[in-house]
Image 1 (cartoon, helix red, strand yellow):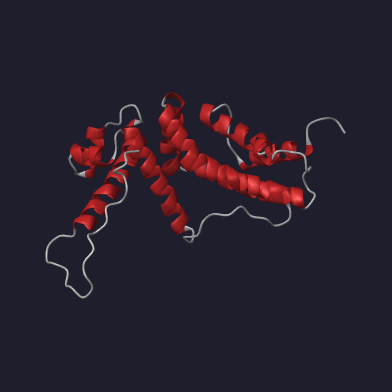
Image 2 (cartoon, rainbow, N blue to C red):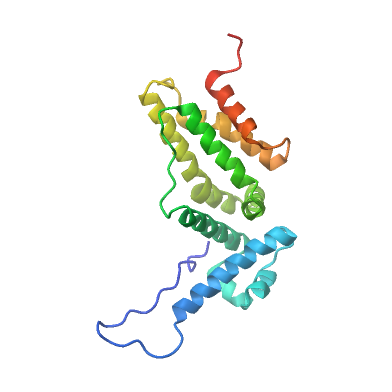
Length: 220
């Protein structure tokens, strides 16, 4: 993402001085930025990532393409930031606090709860199109792929790590396992099925992943 992508802020004024009449450029910039976010998400949902262009995003947002290039270097950068903003909006709608992994003392129940919610989000049209676009583009665009993992994926995976470590502390999980590897037993199959559409996504599917991961598949 371009180093110019930080949100513009209003110039500071000495205490007690009145604001001058006229438009607030920072508010205008913020409105334009969110219009661009909305336009990028809508374009990807309607015509797909490959047919989405900076020009098309600018036209939808009602801004000049030079405005977009002032803040971002590519449509991939626009979409990534738009998706991050979409995720923040979802968090605010849910109460505005950072999402936490539940810890009820029942590891299986907590994992199933989170994976069911993940399925619901992956199947939500509002999230699915940009998620697929970013995941696919990240495979061929190394810089975007790194940002996608760093800003979106890894913070979520670290929540699983924390919950598995808690389970280790309580004796529910072996002390010698690496939580960062162990979480892939249920997260990776879900991601693979979603990305390649190799099978249906359902709560029953993720519940089974948790059961297989926690109890193994060897005969008892």
